[in-house]
Amino acid sequence: FRAELAGRSIVYSADTCFNPEVLDQLEERGILSAERKASLCSDCSVQPADLLLHEAGVPPTHTPISALAALPESIRRNVRLIHMSDERAAGSGFAKVRPGLEHTICIDAEPPRHAEAKQILQILQATDLFRSFDVASACDVLACIVPRSYTAGAIICRAGEAGPALLRIVRSGAVQYAGISGATRTLGYCDYFGEGEVMLTDGRHRATATAMTDVEMLEIERGDVQYLLRRRPQLLHRIQQRAQLLDHAPSWAAIGANSVFASFSMSQVTQLQSVMREETVRCGDVVWKKGKEVCDSVLVGDAELAFRELPDASGVSDEDLEPFRAGALLVNVYALEQRLPHEMTLTAVTAGTIFRIASADLFELLDHNPGAFIWMRDALVVC
Image (tube, rainbow, N blue to C red; front, top):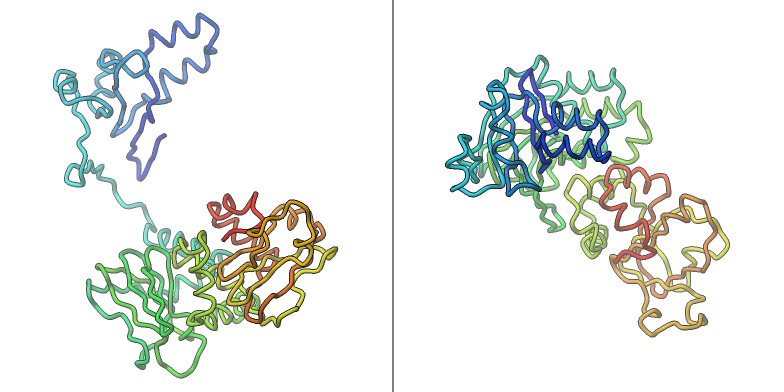
């Protein structure tokens, strides 16, 4: 691949063999077209760049040193070798890439114009709060944001204490976030917090946030956040719902008990909590009814659920009859996509809470978290 910034470039061979003699033979045998061979020889793993990282393992499956040595000096002087022993590198005439941060290769480049604004916009695009904003709205956000730095160990805010109500987005570094409920999370790039404070009026922080490293933060005052969201009632509703669940122990317990959701970053948890709709069920309540259209998924809280028809099905084991407990996610992505009917009736075995995630909200969540989609696409239950 090739990466470019401000007129400077890096090319990484990704183990692509560069050997013109072999490529000529492959063309003669009809394995490569003339166009493909020309590409492999001139604009693939070898091309002009300020840094060309190329493998040089054992030929013929890897690139021989002789092929790289025959390159024009303008390309050859920027080649750095990987995938070879120190002994072979010593006699190659090329420098070898060394492991370790102390051997980091830096290509100096002039920062592009509007670099800071671009970086802030990229951070906003990565958050569920602002990614749907149009250009005019994004300009409003840029006008409101205040960058701020915190040194390692600094208390950014303390639970229960009065202080300015700010929405804070982590720009760099790591923050330890400890909510009133006792849940502790490590926040990193693009994670945000403070939405509870900007929705409330008591002026007290709902969590303690501590800078674990030097931290760069983007902060927006309460009045500015409310102005930005006032014209977007659906987004405002999500923020209010998320603020209610922020210190809500049952939602955290359900998320933590699920093998997929437990590995989510704080930003991903934020997206998830913003679409979770809590519901209290009693023993015997019908959660899904056989024959009705599949329109949501269910994350089990402290209730227990079971399919009513399952005990009468053939070949069912005792394990299959165990009720679904905290953290179980009942989801059928295919049925949701095709708007199919439920094949069985899901009922509450014990009273408690469940969390529904509507179809549209789930697909939006999966669009931005493809790893979770891989887990769910062929599953009916993700525990």
